[in-house]
Image 1 (cartoon, rainbow over the protein chains, first blue to last red):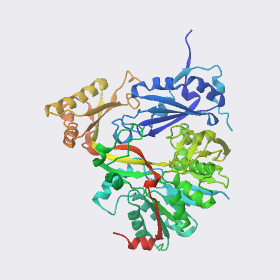
Image 2: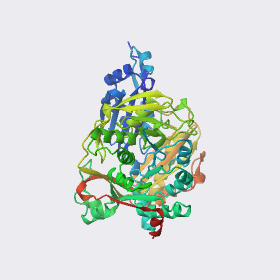
Image 3: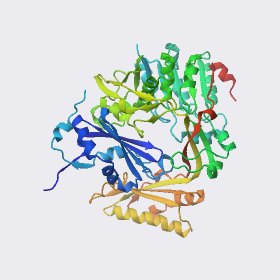
Length: 119
Length: 456
C-alpha cells in the first residue's frame, strides 16, 4: 500500500528570516490537532533533508506549544548571509513559502487540522 | 488608558508614506522608526568618511518634514528612532536646523550615543573580540574593520525622555529597546522587574518590522487589501499585557496568525531571546484574537539581562557584481548554461579566474535550490550570474562580459538595457560581544535650535 501525502501548507503557515548566516524558518499550525501532528512528523531531520541542497550545516528544532508553532534554525544555510551571499535570496526570505510544499503523510483527521480552531 | 506605541519604519527604505498616514489616522503616545539592519552601519561609515556631517538615515529628516504639523498639533507625541546611525549628533544637528526653520526651534531633542566601539577595538588590535559563533580571533582582520557598534539597551532612551526629549535619536540600540525605553519611562517599572521588561521587549519585537505584523509578509496575504496597509500600534497596559492593532480603516489585517508569525520571526531559541535589557522567554506567551484587528498578547516572562552586550562589526572583504540576461527559446535552459560557460571562458582568455561565481536560472526553481526541477516546456529563463573576488579589476572585467553576448552570443538574449553590472565593495559581518563595563552610553538633551548651532 502506498502512503498518500499532503502538503505542510494545508495545515500550517510559515515565516522565515536571517540570523547572520543562519536562517530561521518558523511553522505555525492552524489548529491544535495540527500542532500535535507536526510535533511527531515535522522533525529536524525531515526539514534538513528537505533543504538538503542549501548545504545546511545542521537543523535545530525549538517548540512553542502555547503558540502552536515551532522554529527551525538552519545553521549556515545562507551561503554567507545578507552581506556576502551570491544567491538572489540573500536573507532566506523564500524559505517560509518553500517549506509549505514539504510533503507529509496524510493524517486521518486532515480536515480537522485544516480548520482554524484557536480563539 | 494603555500606552500606545506605533512603528512606521521597519528598515532603511521602508514605505515613505507610512509615518504620515499613521499619524493622520490615529493618535499614539510614541512613534518609533527603525532604520538599522546588521550592515547598515558599514554603509554609513563609508558615507561619513566622505562627509563628516553624514552617516545617518537621512530619510528620517523627510519623515519629520512630513509630520511636523502633527508634532505641532499633538504636544504629547514623542518620536524615538535609531536614525542616528553612525553619527547621531550630526543627525540631531541637521534635524535641529530643519525644525528651527519651521518654527519648532524649542523642541527638545535627545541624543543617545556611546555605541561606537571602532576606536576602542582598533586600539586593542581586536584582542578579545572573537567571533561569537566560530570563536575565531579578530586580530588578522581588525585593520579592515569599518564599523563596530554595541547594541545599547533602553536605559539611556528612558533617561533622554526623563530629561524632556520629544524626539530621541540613537545610534545602534537593540530594535526592541526603542519600545522598551518609552514603556519604562511611562510606567516607571523597576529595571529588574524582568517579566515586565520582557513584556515591553515583546511589544518592541512585534512592531519593529513595521507592517510585518499587520498583514505584510503573511502566508494568508490574499484575504485583505495591502494598498493602504496600516502600520502597527502596540498598546501596553500597566501590568505589561499587550494588544497589537493598527489604525481604523487602514489596509492589512491583524490576526492571531499574523501576530504569531512575527513573534517567531528571526529568532533562535524562543526560550532565550537575548536583548540588552532582558532575556525574553517567548514560550510562555499566549495570543488571542479579540476581533476588529485587535490581538492580545499576554504572559511574557523574562530572565536577568546578560552581562555582555552584542557587538555588530563589519570589515571590508572584497567585491561583488551580479548580472542578468533573459534567455528565450525552447532550449533556454541549455542555452543559459552555455552563456554562463561563455562568460567564464572569455574571462579565461583574459587570464582571469574568479574566486567564486554563482549561476542561477530564475524561473526554473533556483530561488530555493533543490526543491523543484524546471518544467519541461519552459520558453524563457532569467540567467543571473553573481561573482565575488578580492580584486576589483577582476570583477570589472566580469561586468564587461554581458553586453557583447547580445551580438556575439546565441540568438534569443535580451535585457541588457539596464546597463553594465555594478561592482560594489562588500563587507563581512562579524558578530561579537563586549563587557558592559567597556561601554559607556551617553545621553544629551537640548533644543532643536541649540543642536542647529552646533552644526559642523
